[in-house]
Length: 98
Image (cartoon, rainbow, N blue to C red):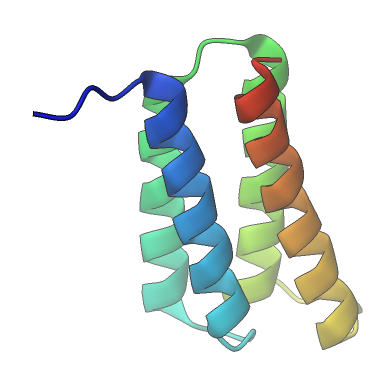
């Protein structure tokens, strides 16, 4: 059995979420939103740092804008970049233990 650490699991989850968002077209997509928010729920159970929880809430906000019913004025490319930056920022905080 492989020895895994909590940080490894959360890092893998962040990478999987990044890949999923990068491959999924933006726009109203209830299934993509449900899957991404479920991934965020799993990540939330694995962290305890208040600053990381705030970063995760920020990430959820951008996911809802990208895939939910929320009306916004962001161009699609800008929204995708913001969302991917939020995932990358959260993943970096997980790796750094912040």
